Length: 116
Length: 112
Image (cartoon, rainbow over all chains, first blue to last red; front, side):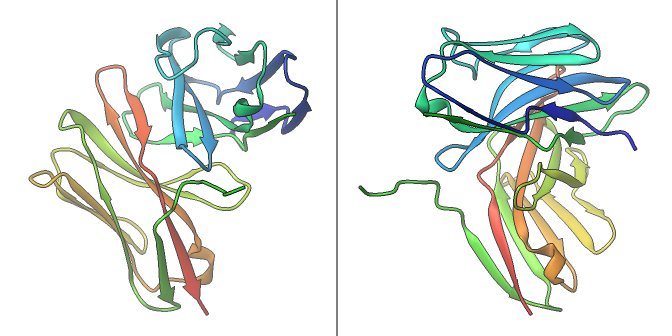
């Protein structure tokens, strides 16, 4: 049963600490997206990758956020230093299986971050 | 202090009735329009998509209509069931790099 896996599912940390969220996309998918969901802003696109190359991270606060894909099976989203306003649920999604063309993205269960 | 948050449009529907959820989009260059369902505590789940060169697509109990003239997208759910209660998002895919952005969402409440 192929699915996107995100860790950790929940994270509580103090302001100023570094936070790293990890995502394992579905094998064979070549696009990976990071979204942030809050009550204030809905689902915001932070960054996305195609074939591990970053294509657009304009939605991400550059001074504290960074997104990478060290290899095809791992995407990371790092916040350093974290702030209370970063509290949200962070979703990873993957899509575009080889040989297919569809609008469908497959989402993980999300990482709920609380910064105190 | 006062709580400020996103005010989600809410649609309340009697079980068994049909539901229509609407969405306005902004980018004429989008090549796919997609509907997602998000249940509480879970990630969004794909329901159905439609290419920009189509105006209607049907799935199981769902139909998506696309009106490019007024940049409007709708999701129709037939014979709405309690399990359909969720937040529904429309999304659009744009560009050769397949960027997917989401609308605000509509909360569907099914009354048993």
